Each structure stands twice: as C-alpha cells, then as structure tokens.
Length: 385
Image (cartoon, rainbow, N blue to C red; front, side, top):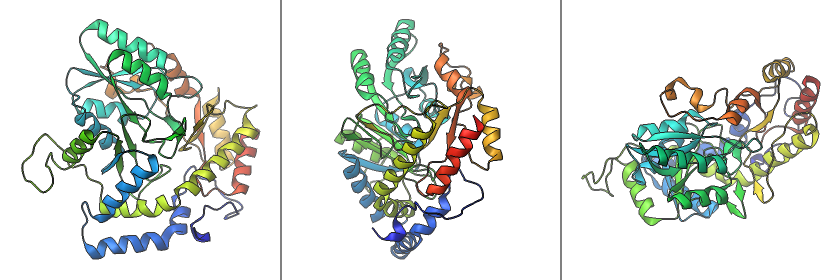
C-alpha cells in the first residue's frame, strides 16, 4: 500500500471543526486510483453490470468468507430483495429491532409483510434474543401473522449475538436475515460479517465503513439457490439475457462506476478498519469512567461505523460539544415504533429502545481523523460531561 493510500494519523488541520464524517480527506488520498478506475469504465462503456461489478462481487465474497455476493442498488434494496428471494410477503411477520434506521422496517413493509418490533440489549443496542423469543411467541399466539424471518441489525458496526438469535429462530422454524448495513468489516467468533447468517444485506452508502459515491449495497449468502434468486430479482426477474420475467423483480443493480470506486476502497479497507479500531480504543480508554462507552464482547470486532456513547443529559451535552466545534450525530432520535410511518403496526413494550433514543450520541470515528483531532474530541467530552 502506498503512503498516499494509508489513513492519516498525522496533523492535517490543527484547529477548526472536527467533523463527524469527512469524506473529502479519503477522496484526496485515493483520488488518482479512483479516477483511473472510473476512466476505465468510461472507456469500456459497460455502465450496467460491467466487469467491475463481477470483480467486486468475487472480492466481497472472498473478504467475508461467504459463498456468494451480489451487488445491488442500495442497502434498503438489499433488504427488500433478500426478503423477496426468501418468499416473504403479505401475512408474514418479520422480527426487527426497535432501535435502528427506518429502512429496516420499511423494507419489510415494501414486500407486503409486517414488521414486529423487538427490544434491544442495553449494552450492545442489538436485538435482545430473550425479547425476540417473547415476540415470536406472542405473534404466533395471536394468530393473525405467520412468523417467517428474524432480521437482526448490527448497530453501529457491532455484530449481533447471532448464536443466541439463531437458536431462537431455529426453535420457532424461522430464517435469519442479517441487516449488516453498518457492520461490513466486523467479525464475531472468528468469522466476518457476511458469513454470520444464511443471508446478509449490507450498504455502501458514502458514510459507511466501506462506502461508494452514491447508493449501493450487496447481498451475501452461502446458498446457491438464493444467489440465483437475488440475481433474477435485481434485474426485473429475468434470468441472464432472457427477456422473460420468471418472477416479480425490481431495478436493483449496482452501477459499474460505483463498483469501480468500491474496488479502490476495498484495497485499503483493512488499514482503515485498523485505524477506526485504534481511535475507538483510545476513546474507550479515556472516557469509560465518564460516559457509557460501547461494550464489545470477547471474540467480536466492530467495524465502527459509529462510535456511540450514552449520556443522560444528551441534548445539553451535545450543545456543549458543538461549542467546542466537535461534530456529533444522533442515531437515532426515535425508536421505530415512535415513527409516524409505523404507528399502525403491532405495539409491544420496548423500554430499552425508548431510553436509548433519548441518550445516544455519536462521536467522530472515521479513518482519516488525526491523532490531534482524537485528543481534541476526548478533551471536549471531558469538558462537557
């Protein structure tokens, strides 16, 4: 890896705001390689499903240790297409954590199924397997929906407790579909995200740990039948070059130019993950006695899409950080059942999700933060608590 490609740990700007995300530093660092890749696409002209898409799919599968990877148009489309490939539809219940981005539940509604909200663990913010068991039993007992799929979300980059969730799902005869939109690059139990569930959906939105310059996503699976179904669905339900729609499909392909950009970023992805983990470690070491810092279980590695702490007086704390010119984010201000779009869905007690929505705040953690900026963030948090 060239020096220009390596994430910087030296000073870029000694003063000024510390942004929550700074995509321009990475762009400048990788500009020559990205421009060369884009020029190649412009020259060969295969803008849809060009050779870069096939190359990226092979590299993603190899990186994750999965059998197959299929590039698609966004993280939300990845979830929707995966649900379609599993045959999920009207009358089916899909169990999702109540504390996550709206696209998780939105993808379920898009295929005509019904999201059932499950509370999260207070330490990881990921799906609580015990509450999942209760939610499935309640849904089955009510008899109005068929329990079909469990969709855990790896919030902030940390893989969910897949062994516990898989055990509950197996006991009830459900399939696990992992929403890994924030966690590609993470791992648990010696396996990487993308190979922790029978089928996984991820996002390459620009601010993700591995992000393109627009919308993009991928589906990873071990099952050849699911790989084939996903490839049909992403191209209007057609197989190969045939015109016949063999099943209902969508326009869900990953653009060739986005694949080309991702190929460059994948070259430096391991180094960027190491830098994110180094920054997160410094935050935790310095702040663990002042705020509630992320808890990473033994044997797990977060991709650190976000470094999220819990603070009781969150909004006042965030205002004080803003006065220090430290960028922050609120992911998320509302639990899913509190969104107007989902107000008509089944209601269950979700106390941990509701509390988290009032206390979480995310700090800068991107790979191009300098050591001096990390020190500034730590100092500002200490001064603001």
